[in-house]
Length: 159
Image (cartoon, rainbow, N blue to C red; front, side, top):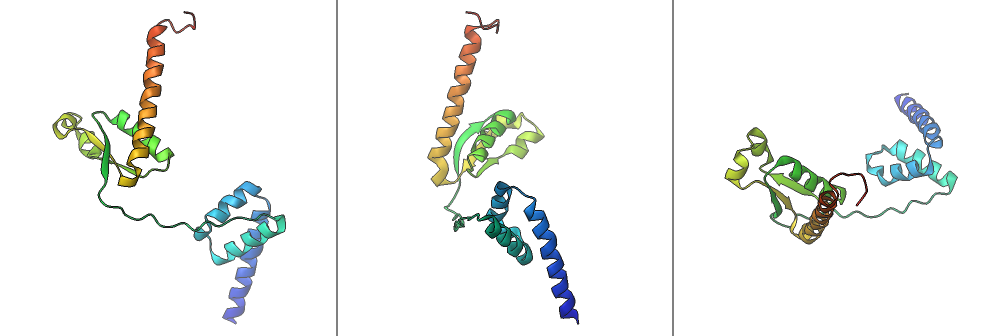
């Protein structure tokens, strides 16, 4: 008797999910399919049925877990928190895992920053070159913007 109740529950859940998935856009369905590990078996089955109904084929890429490649390496040092956070966000947006060493110590008292050599932006050794390139590009863009501001102090667009 209990087994029949569970079957009914899963059928009810499957119908509920089928209704939800039918209302979603193709893009949103593809996003869900890409993150199928987070779905229950019933949800996965309902999603696959909706994708099949729409004729959407989602290529499943076998994601290899990233191997730990050894000790982290330092990309850059920062004295001030805002600069460090901007640099970290640039790496995060490029999907480069990074870590700000000593940021908590500097948050407690910013005067410690000089004492400990600032915050260190750390990455995996295999990401070092790409991280340096991204941060150099950002620095060049910031310098160009600053030079533009200095050449036109009124900010009115006239030369």
